[in-house]
Length: 164
Picture 1: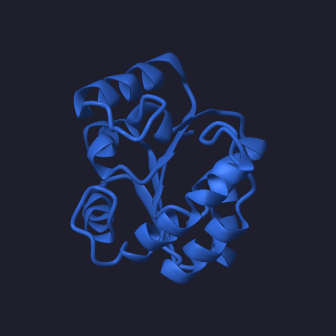
Picture 2: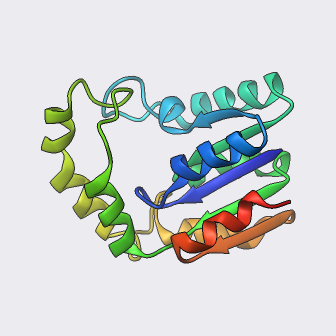
């Protein structure tokens, strides 16, 4: 398995990655870990892309998951499958509200809760953003991918990715 999961924050990428790995073991890389250096400042793009390339080289079977089209585009040719999770802004915001504490991202659940309003606002602009995190960039990546690809527009469809 050499799979990329792409979509807005809250789309269900991490959840689906866990389900895929339960069916077929693979190394998993959340692009958040290579995009940021423990803070809110993005690392230089070249550093993030190189970290992903090292990860890919170190594993025969892998899943990359994230919303960073700029990091994914240079490594797209290494993937066999691209799954675009595009359930709509409202679903993504619901998932963000229901998300349990993420200790790998926040020092406490209170810190995560304090960032929720900003996250919901950011997620809400997905359809109109022109940056590497927005629908326009994700759609472009999906369209240019030559391998097996699926776009799921509702979480009820995600289980289709679990069957070969």
